[in-house]
Length: 297
Image 1 (cartoon, one colour):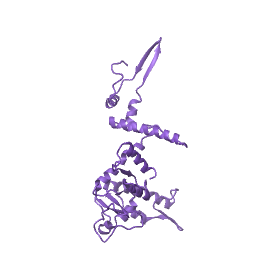
Image 2: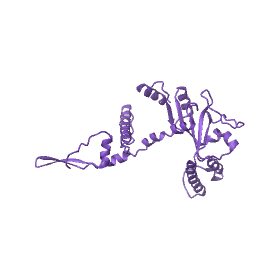
Image 3: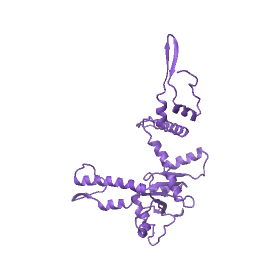
Image 4: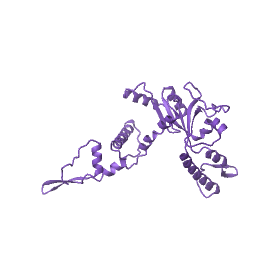
């Protein structure tokens, strides 16, 4: 938060949007409990992913009254404590508590169940269980994986932890300080999942965005490197949005197009590859006139 809050303030000032509410979205584990409190104190809204291990505490009432069976698309709007040892869910009540901005011990939590996610989670758990059994059996020499319990008697499969994990498959949680009066659960989830645009950018192939990690120790070198990389990233995203084509396809379309100038008997001759339909589409989308129109090749 020593950098997040100042950067947001600078962004607001630069674009003349002071006073406009902004929402900080981040994946699970990216922001600490202290970070969330600081963002809230600064008047900023946030939506962050929650770890599935928090589900039993957040959904105490639901599990007590309805068990751990969910239906596809089921959404639970409840609260999550600031601290793991705090209890904010009353199992004597069937209805989930409603978070208010005046709450000083909990945040709002939205949990959703998806059958598709459950299938994917189950496949992951099966693979983790298989690795754990191989380690216990001694057929895999590796660092202790998940679901392996080590005691004085040796290694064994942690069946209790595996059972707990299986009871939570298909669940995805979101923590926010936005009240339901401003944003319903579906909107909270939709805003969080806009993160894929950011993730897509940073998962760009290194062959498409030709940048490599560097070790810099001076501010100027670090800022220069970041400026080059983010400028290239911004241009790439602009090209993708304008053309409707992936940056990889754009690069592969334009890279083969060559133009050469040779001198024969004192006269210069220029030769070039003809533009493909995709290349023409790129130029048209960017409002660039075909530089080879009417020329022989």
